Length: 209
Image (cartoon, rainbow, N blue to C red):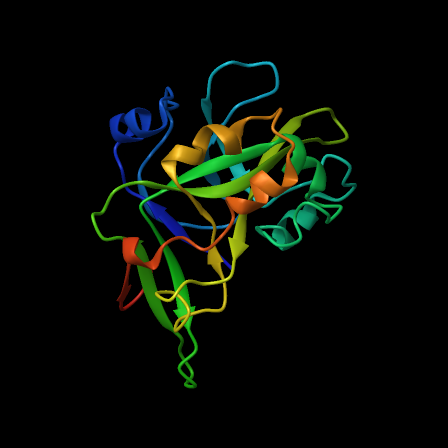
């Protein structure tokens, strides 16, 4: 699973990489947790351009009766998201990107404490995690927008640490992934393969702060 990540890039770097206007309330962070607001890049139906927004991490499907389900839906398995009731509508029409500069995984060492690792690009550049988003309304009619991060099998960098890793979308595929009219399942599924290990570096760290 992907339960923590970081986005330390200044807003101007995010704006340039993803061709969006970054919300004024955006703040770089080293330890982004589930249930917190995260920066999301999306293209809504009928809109020609990408937009950036802050959504809560942990998906509440639009049909859900209890918003507490979000705690169980911080990740979606890439292999099954297109069919699972919690994710299939979003997979078809509400895909998004979550900008990141690194993500964390914990290695089970057999002891009492798991070893945390920071995984990032060799060059330190921004990258994009594949996500899904949805819009839910509470009984009073208040709109709540939430998201989840897709995960896949690990590549050779992550495999010694954890049995899953987040899906990373390459820049040349941003438009296809974000296009709400793109419904060709095979083309979309092809984007969800493990990211090239040659691009990533894993570093053991003392703790996640």
